[in-house]
Each structure stands twice: as C-alpha cells, then as structure tokens.
Image (cartoon, rainbow, N blue to C red; front, side):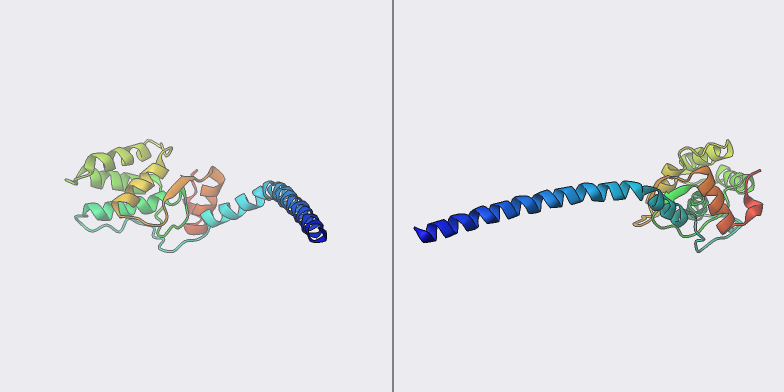
Length: 176
C-alpha cells in the first residue's frame, strides 16, 4: 500500500511539473512574439541594408556585341532589374535609366529573337515608366537562365532604390 501511495504522489508531482512546464513554454512563446514584433523595425532595416548594399558585377553600359544574341539581352535586362527588386542574392547590375532602356528596346526591336514579343513588351513597359511588375520581369529572366538562387520576392521602396543606385552607380544616376 505504501508503494502505491509513493507512486501516486510521484505521478501527481510529475503531472503538475509537466503542466507548469507547458504553461511556461507557451507563456515564453508569447513573450518572444512581443519581442519579435518590437524588433521588426530593426529586422526591416537590416533587410533594407542587405537589399541596397554594393553588389559585384556592376557595369554602366550594356556591353552587348555588335549582333547580340537573345541570352545576352536577357542577361542585361536581368541585371537592370536588380536596382528595383528584392532578392536574396543579386549579382550584376546595370543602371535602369532612359538611355539603357532605349538602347535595349532598339536592340530587341531589330532582332529576330524567339522571345522577341515578351522582351519587347517588358522593354516597352519600362520605356513608359511602368516598373510595377519588374519583380515578375526579373523572375522571367531568372527562369530563362535556370536560376536557382536570387528569385525576386518584391519591389524596393523608392528610398531603397535610391540607396541601391547611390551604393552601386553613384549619385549621378539618381532620377531627376
């Protein structure tokens, strides 16, 4: 009988300890959520700095051959999107300014590319100042190039884009 009482008391103690432990764990999770939400601004700042930092592979002109192939144009357009999109990894950038947009538009217009219609539609949107789908444009190029890392997941804010331009191209490339 004495053994049963000891086992019973131990089971009750273990149950109380388990309940208390689960309660503390759940309570601690709520406290963590509070900390996380209060630190969200800091996390956003970190992400913003990551998105606007200086990246490798920056060039200022299109550097296309005399008779560029489709893959060269896609590469240039892909690099142009980097100043406007959020992506985990970015390599290569060319300023997306009227001069480069017009140059790429002219190259595509005078081409016989298999994807001429798609590329021309994208370049025409850019030429008209419509960058609302540039993250989709980036991912179109990224898919074409069989990308595995660096898929775009959104657009930079205007201030983030300005920082990206300053960090990678210089003040002289800021829009008027």
